[in-house]
Image 1 (cartoon, helix red, strand yellow):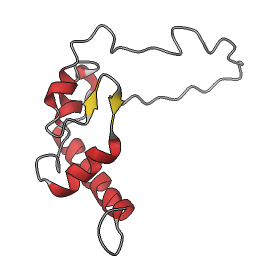
Image 2 (tube, one colour; image 1 turned 45 degrees about the horizontal axis):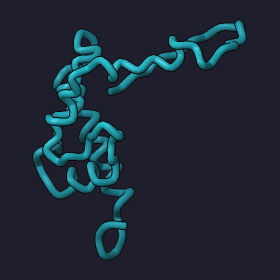
Image 3 (tube, one colour; image 1 turned 120 degrees about the vertical axis):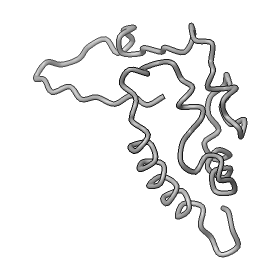
Image 4 (cartoon, helix red, strand yellow; image 1 turned 180 degrees about the vertical axis):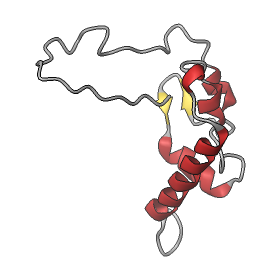
Length: 107
């Protein structure tokens, strides 16, 4: 899931434990993201980002899109288009290669 936003105000925020601040759409979801991940890196416990990134480097399956993210029903009406998804995935994959780059392979 990808949530982004900005609030510009001169009002101080007080209660950070408010349900509006800690909104989590996942508890009532059928969690299609878990079964959609071909690398099995998404689970009830969270996302194993390191295993995910290694899988992306070793497989073309996830090089242009994230099946798990695309399976998420939350925010479908505001999802990126396929060109935007491919652009961001290409950029992230380049960054991931640099992150894991080491003389003999992975860190």
